[in-house]
Structure formats: C-alpha cells, structure tokens
Length: 194
Image (cartoon, rainbow, N blue to C red; front, side, top):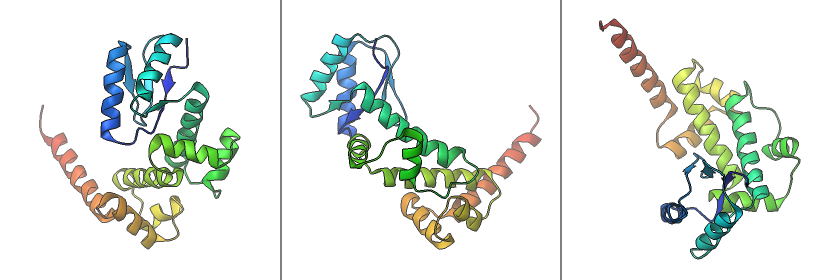
C-alpha cells in the first residue's frame, strides 16, 4: 500500500480539477479531495493503479507528487495552519523559521514545490490563512480591530484593515456587523418555543 494522500503539481484552475476528477473516476478508486487540494484515497492503492493515474494525468500536464513531496506539502500546510489558527498569539518568528523548526527544511526548492502545487506562494498562503483567522476572531471573539491586528502581528491596524479589505472585498467592520446580526437572530431563535 502507498501513502494515501497525494498532491498534484500544476493543478491551479477549475479545469485542472475537472481533469483530475475525470481521471480519478476512470481508476474506480474511492477518494475525496481535501480542502487543500490533496487526493485522499479511501482504500488501499496498489502501486500499478497509482502509476496509471500518474501516466494519465501527465498527458494533461499534471504531475502526481510522490510520497515524500506530498508529505512535505502537508507538513507546510499543517505548520502554517497550526501557528495561525491554534496559537493564542503568533510567535515573533518568520514563517520560514517556523517551517524550518517544525519540518527541518529550508530552501527555494520547497517554496517552488509549494507554489507549483497550490498555485500561490507560501507568503500568499500565509496571508490568506491570517485573513481566515481574522474572520473567525471578528465573528466569534470580542477583540477590537486593533487587538486582532496585534494578535496576528500586522504592522498596524490600518495595514490589517487594508489587507483584509483587499482579500475579502469587505471591511472588518462589516464582519463585526454580521456578528451582531447573528447574535440577534440566535437570541430570537431561543425565544421561539419548539
């Protein structure tokens, strides 16, 4: 049996994802595709079936990563996610240092593999994860915009607001408004007898 989670290099568009699903359907394997774009096989995968999938994908310019590179991508995603989403406060280290300390890896080759798989740079992935964390904090915590800016180690509150708006098209204040509206709806729902 082989490692049951694999990433695909150069899968950066909806058409690529469609091609992947079509090729996977031909194999008859049971699978799902993770939130981060990895194929997660739901059954034992024989090497020859994986080789056939690799060959079929290569005809479209897609590359099925080997076990080590797939684990590397997973490690990077998990390290970034763990630090941003599950730390009370972001450490005062660069993410390059964090990835190095968690995975023992450095170098441009790692950055290139990640970019080839995700279609964005590690830096952009980190920014997007920080925006997702900011949304959570705006909707579920009682932190101010300045508090969120500080917690996520933005240069200042204005930079946080600008980056948030750039990536969501909405302001942090809008998310605070959503929080209030959700709270009102939840209170009203609790008052209605079942």
